[in-house]
Amino acid sequence: MTPKEKMSIPPQAMPEQDALERARNMREVALGYTAEMAKKEASRCLQCANAPCRKGCPVAINIPAFLAAAAEGDFAKAIAIIRETSLLPAVCGRVCPQEKQCQKDCTMGKVFKDVGKAVAIGRVERFCADFERESGAKKNVDVAPPTGKRVAVIGSGPASITVAADVRRAGHDVTMFEAFHKPGGVLVYGIPEFRLPKAIVQNEIDGLKAMGVKIETNFVVGRTRKIKDLMEKDGFDAVFVGTGAGLPKFMNIEGENLVGVFSANEYLTRANLMKAYNTARSDTPFWHGKRVAVLGGGNVAMDASRMALRLGAEKVYLVYRRSEAEMPARIEEVHHAKAEGVEFRTLQNAKRIIGDENGRVAGLECLQYELGAPDASGRRSPVAVPGSEFVLDVDTVVVAVGNASNPLIPATTEGLEINKRGNIVVDPETNATSIKGIYAGGDIVLGAATVILAMGEGRKAAAAINDYLASRGHK
Image (cartoon, rainbow, N blue to C red; front, side, top):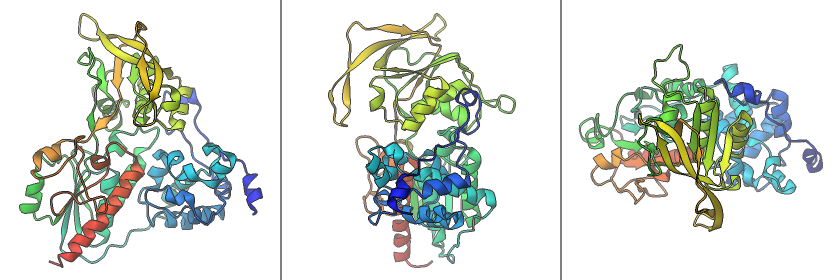
């Protein structure tokens, strides 16, 4: 097929549930490609010699090669190519911001001057991963002979899953410690079922167990056991810290202590991990607000506002102090939230939360904003318009303005260097921390980032851990 013929193939739209129907159920919104759609979308790839898409992938998947296989209908070969460098294709194909990574520099998108016309790499990746899982074609990973070395992996999110697999593959004994009662990290507590079905995450966890990775849940490193004890008393030769960015930030405005105010972390954890939406099977306490304001403009804000609808809210406002063009959320997530009925209140921001005589949320006082000069991030700074106060009639406020790194490990590990934001400082080449034998990666290092960036960190750390343990010889 000539490049001109490839360019004449229209992008394949992703089938999805009806917007108003899905806004009241927890089933996955995007329904996925058919085999024919996946082949057609993959065949749009121009097979560029310089592969700009691959340069934009944090784990350097051989994108042209897997798309070529998918275009031929050889999905088994396509997923085998993906799995050479990526452990979580079914996850990344669903939640990674491809439009800001691999698809950003796709030549097809450049030709049409529209990233929306780029080859839908993530959607084809998702199809290939689902094909593998649903056909039962996933193969067991080969594990090297035992080395006698033991590695502790703290946390069970994307970075930790990657490290556990790569280190176990090298023959080391691996134990993963998870504070919650279910492994999966942000994949299970943060990302809603309607974006990432939890059965898919469990499938990956089961794969780790099949490799021989041991998983200890309800184990809070720093409280149940300190890192020093894991190494000096329990005999672990190396430790990887992947505890994420789970410390919610608040706005420090009047009324944040009222009943009915939540961090997005708590709100989503109760709904996702503890399944508060499933009242027939779950006793999780939950605040069922009818008029909800979500503060923020990122993916977490979109998740929280869309979850509020599914939990029975009659009205959901998304309050964001910049314009929609400045929102850090994925374009797809913004589109989905709007289609489902979330009302966007851009160029507005909360000034104070109003309470009633019982200490419950009774309203949200906001200010109008306008955009000024660009700030350090390149986005135009929001400037409050004096005297523009107004009140939104709400009974619930969800604060989704970001998260900081989990402070427990640094606070309980003497000598572990952190920066002013509380992130663990690591060698950028190896992800080694200031303490010998301890490595870190993912959001605890990067701040809140993406699944595949965390996986890239994990891959780098695992390689360094394997080198470190090899240098110490067999036990």
